[in-house]
Image (cartoon, rainbow, N blue to C red; front, side, top):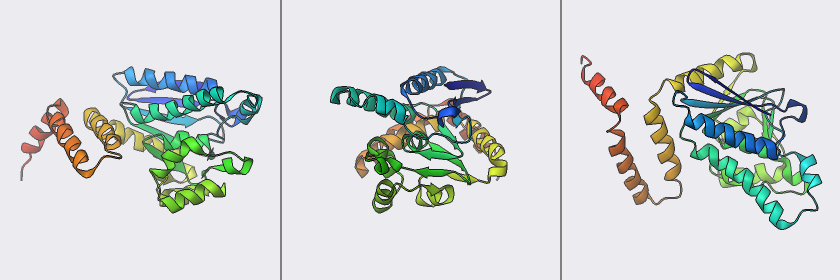
Length: 251
């Protein structure tokens, strides 16, 4: 269900349930968590790439699974929701940048999978959306991810309309990072990920950690957190090497 491959500095995690449009079930959640933990411990890995097999990235939660659990109690529903929330959190807490390569449709919880990543690269024909309201459900867990990317009024419309938006519109709204033509999507993703993997691992890791840590902080608290990371960064080998090389440049 999750295919994990490491090539050089990139760990590629592939949603491999194309016959179900890569819909999320309990097994996928568990396997994704395990694959993320494994990539975190691989010292040679600098970037994690999340992709999908088949024409769609992810159709969201497996509705067949949810229908089968209709008679469960509130406690079971809460535990199930928490497992998905913990998966989204695992992307944010991962020590390395996680990039989503999205083509086809990324809907509901599947859109949430992409938005939990640090960067989202989409093929031009990709559709993003939250159709939960159309079946009387609420896009509750993914809401916090969307709200951190787009304004309040745009978020409301996206959540309650249930209508998908094309990649260009999603990019303009701030939902995703880059849009590439379908014809050279794979090459563009490889170029983006390769360039990111070539950056200082310590600098990228500290940047990611600080960026998410200051969310919700007051201005003063965010500045204080930044001063600590500034000092820590100056102790790293990458920074010391970079300062020395810059100092040797001819004016």
